[in-house]
Image (cartoon, rainbow, N blue to C red; front, side, top):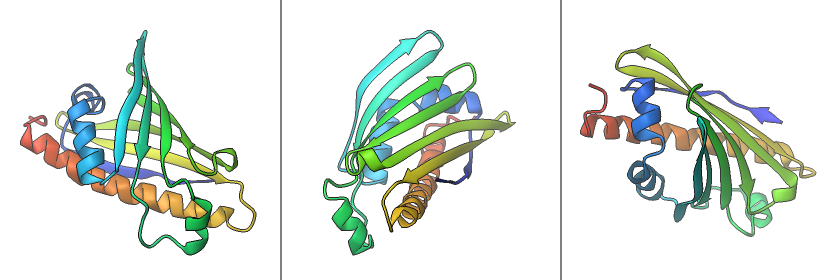
Length: 172
């Protein structure tokens, strides 16, 4: 299993991130469908349970053009996945369990997203994804590639999110 720590500074408070951005449908649709070029992104279920929000999201990112041929063959069903997430509002923490549509029995993908306040108008978003691929001969390559792709996606989303914050004056 491999993991990586991915950090970005947002131009808004942690409170604004969790209450006005993270669960916002318009923000998420534009982020995933327009900025990240997913072919599909939709919330299948979302329910409040006390201080938690439980969500299931169906997503299909585009298949990267530079994906090695060996991985393309393994991913016959594409890169689609279901994200099962729990947002703990009090702890400002989102735990996620990703169920890939390809290699589901051979892959475990989890992660935890948190924020650290930096000032009244900025915070650091921290995401720690963990990937385990139990595929003989190429498991390590799959883990590394997935973490690299996750980091690229989070880098793009940070740029998009800070632009979103600025356009809507959410950081003030």
